[in-house]
Structures are given as structure tokens and as C-alpha cells.
Image (cartoon, rainbow, N blue to C red; front, side, top):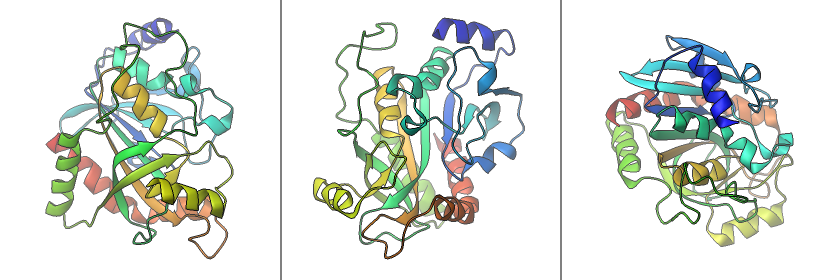
Length: 267
């Protein structure tokens, strides 16, 4: 399937991305502001998973950001949409075969760390994905990576340092922490959040960790930023809604965009 998808895209464009930028919930507007060289709808690519989540437009945008050839995924697919772990990472594997070497993940996440507030940005320095099936289960594609990939540094220390230094230069306060992925689509219970806190998680979401696993497997250098869109259940005193998540992400969008664009320039 990957080769068929690759042939389809190559018939449309000869663009060879260096960087893949995945825009999470409420963060997709950046894709509308770039000078696109080519835009392909997910639904038009053979066998490509299609986004159904709100604010995930489902477009693959080929452009340049800060002089770097970048493929923007304007929206991702999630396990809660009914996709398998392997299907959710299919786009990243395809873009790796197109030549991309760096993956920049973004997402909206619930804050578990008691010092976090809605609107904070967090560099992901590690993740917990033990509650979600690995995208590497099943026959291994040796053309992508080894059967048993090392995960001691999923998120590149080099890229994390660049993002941190860039934030300092832009006078943007940024946190660091561990991200935990659950399947969704329901938000977590207070007991589940307390468990996640005991395990060492600082933020929680429904994506990204298994994407980072698959990306590490196939040779990407990976980094990720979470927008803390809300306080997690049990920490927040009010019920959580998807509207709250998207609204906070939109409010922080200008700061987020500035940090992403400048970080890519410094990669």
C-alpha cells in the first residue's frame, strides 16, 4: 500500500520533504497561512486514512517553512476514529519514504502536572504508551526499521534543546514533561488521571505517542510540543469539553505558530 500511495503522490508532485509537521486539535490554521506548493486531500490518496475529528481538515500540504521543505499534515487520524495503530501511522511512513528525516508532532493535551495552566506549552521529553497497542505489532517491514527498535531517546535531545533555546529567545515560557496517550474518545476519569500522575505523566492526550514510536522505528529524528488546552479530569473542577480544548488552542495559536516556525528555522 505504501508504494501505491507513493506512486500516486509522485504523479502529482516531485516535492521531497525534509520535515514533517503534524498539526493537532485547534492548531491547523498554520496550514492555511503558508504558501503551499501542492495540497492533496487525504481522501484522494489510495488507502490513506481520513480524518473525521473536529478541526482536523485532512490535508497534506507541501510548502517551505523558514527555507525548509516541509510536509504539513493538517490534521491526523486517531484510534478513537476506529483506525488501527498501524493505520494511524501510515502517513508518517509514507512521508518517510518520500525522504523526510525530521518529525515535529504537535497536539492539544490535558495538564496533569499541578504547576501547569491552560495555555502553557510543553516540550515532550518522553512518553508512556503502555495502554495503547504498539503500531509495530505484526510483521516487521525491514525496509522501514529493525524488528526491535530502541526507545531510550524517542524525542531527540538535540531538537528539544533547539526548541527550548528558541522559546527563550522569543520570551516564550515553555515547560518540559512526560506525555501519556490513552485511546479516547472519552476523556479520562479522575482515577485514571491519578494513576497517570503516579506513573510520572505531566500531560495526557489521545495521539502522538504511537506516532513517535513508529517514527523512531523508521528513522525520523522526532520532537513534539503539547499545547496544554485544559486541566485533566479530577484536576479541573469543571467537566471537560472538546470546545474548551479547541478554544484554548486557538487562543494560544499566535505564540504557538511563532515558536514552531522559528524552531524549524533553527533545526
